[in-house]
Image (cartoon, rainbow, N blue to C red; front, side):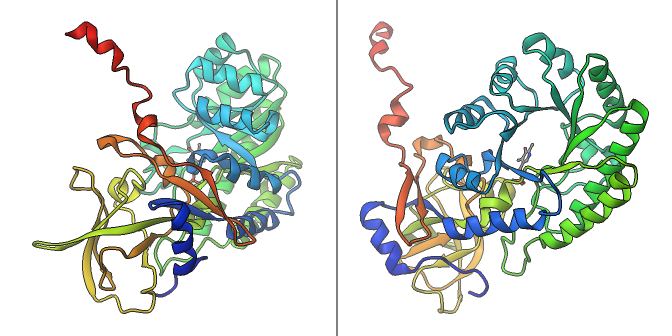
Length: 420
Ligand SMILES: *Cc1c(COP(=O)(O)O)cnc(C)c1O
């Protein structure tokens, strides 16, 4: 096993397990914070640059609190995410509300918190006005359609449910301006898990060009361009992380060409990246319960796709390290499975690993985004704990594991009497 490294040793994890049984997700604070600083530094040339962490990736208040130390905002798209921001004391333009198919009560909550509201549909202008009023700063989500090629998670922009068409942008901003709105932003997000730095430069190209046209035609001024999320991470050994210097230099060049050249600066650049911020810094630690040999060889873990759904959902690759066997040769072919009564409950199919035995500890890499957060209770499975490996080496619990009591909390066995 080459390339992928762990921030902890087998001995450290054995110690952790004495008080926190497997499975659990553990996050590496130092690596996450180093990346957060690198992200900000990469765009230091842009005054007002801000990354809004897409909280759905790992909705844990401790992680958000740490990221906030680096001036990160929060990108929310649901009531619970808005309330999480609220309980963290986040307010106003620290919160980006990028939702779709939005219920009125979410718009009301976003307005109450003073969040930046990013509308997904032109019809939401009236809906927002009717249910919550029109805020002083409004953003629209642009779907550039056939202009831009998508990728497999979001697909082609034309097939994507998100955003306004170009014509709708012109009509929408015009209507808002007529209503007296003076502060405007624009957003787009057409990629997911994209490793090509140039993709983000091209996205900026499209957005800046659109800003020029909108500003000229409508006589409005844009405060920010939100370039969305979608920055990919190297799930596989042979992948390379996105070089943010290439992204930043490319965006800066387009900024000069469109924004500065047309006297439209300053324009703040925002991102709402989720995966890249925490993804590589989370690990799912699990124990091998059983080895099964039938037509294939199976390593059955004490976790399942309720702890990490990406492999079953997208066929996604997550690297696996067997603790203490890092240097052994990967000479045995396994399907690595969970215990759900679903045949797609597999973390890996036909994966070469060192010879594995019951009791071995395995680590699934890159679970810090869309890992714990995609958890569910199907088959009565409980969500695991989340732990944080602090910079000083200490390990603290930042979310307890669910218990059976949590599982049964929404059921009422008392009422059954009436059914007899
Ligand atoms: C999921 C999402 C993000 C973050 O995407 P990543 O791929 O995690 O960077 C940002 N904005 C919106 C609207 C999203 O839905």
